[in-house]
Image (cartoon, helix red, strand yellow):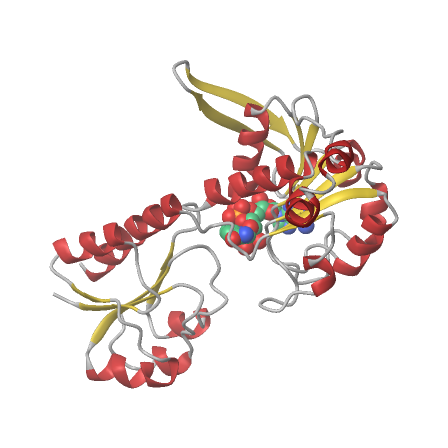
Length: 317
Ligand code: NAD
């Protein structure tokens, strides 16, 4: 039996798996400054974290850890080099939240096509006095069926977004320098598995063709993937969604493209300066905003908890 500290919590289903394997799981949070001592004093074998707890060389040096588990994708809060040097296994659950992120992308896209963010901002203040005016203002929405979804980054979330877009009757064009072809498989309820082949296209071709552009690349270490030039290569009236990482879009260039009318609207789940994003983005009438909740669904948390529990239990033998 091992002592496992799930310092940022773990879904009940994952906790149950670890307890059924005979382990003792604590979910009460230990403050960051007390963590290293706590690990040592309690002989903690596995430390499970989300993004809040930092797992630095100090915590890793406790001498008791066999495994660090990260619920979700990013590993920014874990000192991977030190973990490797000390022979501590680091496990994560990269695919468990792809569906949740892709569904949020479609929610932003469809909301923007029908002006939902702007309508939601204006109805509470003007809905009783200017109903007819707002009905006219928001009365020329667009359907997604038959439109083209452009996807930059055809990895786990990009493919899931492609699947949803295809399911909505959209055409999909994608760019990924490391993927040439892939097959998007999905289950049509009651009719079984359908597979659609996708070949990636040059970046500029995707920019020029899409009605909605969705970004699914890793964090932008070398600057924005979408800047002023790229925005102006897109069709006038296009919509852009970023649920990947802040900085993948140049935020200033986006504001200018929106204000010029060239880009019709944007959906942002991620921001450069989290947790204090630029207020101009938050208050823009044509930006749909969410506070980095792409992966945050009940279903994803359960899948993440179960997958991580199995990986950690296997590591602990
Ligand atoms: P992934 O590694 O499966 O896919 C990323 C893809 O991007 C890869 O296929 C890679 O070849 C491609 N790529 C790399 N550089 C590129 C470039 N310059 N142009 C085009 N394609 C490029 O990753 P994923 O799991 O699909 O995650 C995608 C993004 O979503 C990541 O930034 C991740 O951090 C983010 N994410 C956000 C949330 C959220 O809450 N909003 C949740 C999970 C993941």
